[in-house]
Structures are given as structure tokens and as C-alpha cells.
Image 1 (tube, rainbow, N blue to C red):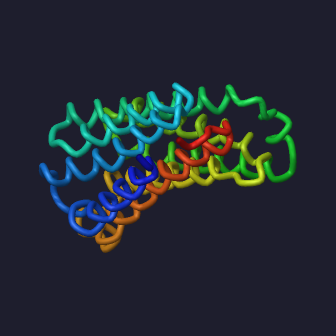
Image 2: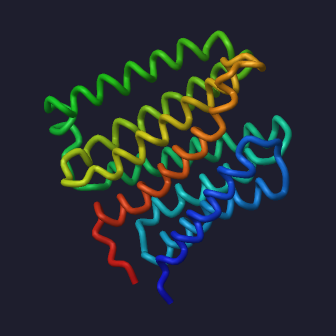
Image 3: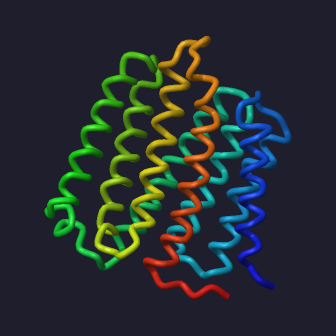
Length: 223
């Protein structure tokens, strides 16, 4: 069996989610397409013998997708928690790679990316602090975790193809736009017509590039 078909099926479900579900209220169809598109990447990662830390992180993200596609504050908090843990597993994976993180972030380009991540994280923290009510501390911790994932990914700037950095950048963009949509934008803001599409496209793209970035960075042979 050519397991790359799993990527095609994942992409097909991602397009269906983009065109028909991402902008609508939660439903069985939305849950099915959203979660399945990431689960297929998860199965692909398992079959290609990706590092266990990546497999666990991707599995947690799939669980987060399921929970966030269901109604209720409890599901929302559990979903955010699943994604936070997923980010931490990704960051832990990045730290296991032999590329020298501190040498790279001390270099010109690495230093610029590091400064940008810190600045974006600080700005998002300030914007969200006054708008998240009882969720101030969980949201702030989540922002910090995202930044940790972003910083640890910078070691892959040393590779010819910084696919992991691209994936993490898209992940950060997706989370930032989602946070602005949920906590900052007004109910009738014109931007709400676009944000669901951007959030989903950047998120799925992030998981796609991370999946193949890990294959490249850790030299996993396709089977």
C-alpha cells in the first residue's frame, strides 16, 4: 500500500472542511472532517515511524480538534489543554535534535526570528490579558507555550529546508488569529467573514509541513 494516499485523503478532507464546515456552527460533519483530516496525518506519522514525541503531539492535536469542534466551555478548555500539551511535545521533540539551538538563535537571522517571536508573544499577551476575563492565566500560559515551541523550532533554520520553522510559523499564525476571533473581534466585525478560513488553512498547513518537516529533519524513510 502506498501510504502517501493518506496525505491525499487528509488534504481532501481539509478542503471539504474549508469549503463547507469551518465557518459554520459545530456539527457532526464538522467534527468528522476536521478531526479525521488530522488523524490521517497521525496514522501517516505512525506508519513512517516518526519520533514518538511527534506522534504523541500530533495525536493530542487531533484530540484538541475533536474537543474544540464540540459545544460547551468544558470541551473548549479541554481542547485548549490538549493543544498546549501537543505544543510542549513538539517543543520537546525539537530539543532532541542535535542541531545547536543557541548557536543558531545567536546568529543574525536566528536572532531576528527570536526577537520577532518574543515581541509577538508579548503583544498578544497584552492584548488578550484585558479581554479574557477568568481565562487570563490559562490564555497567558498558552501564549508562553506557543512561543516556547516557536523558539525551539528555530534550530531548524540550520537545515536547507526549514519546513519545520514554516509549520510552526503557520501554527502560531493560526492560534493568533483564532484568539483574536474569539476574544477581540466584535460580533459583527467584517473580519469574521474571513477568519475561519484563514484559521483552518494555516492550521492544516502547519500540521502538513510539520509532518514532512520531521520526516526530513529526522531522515525517516517512507515505506
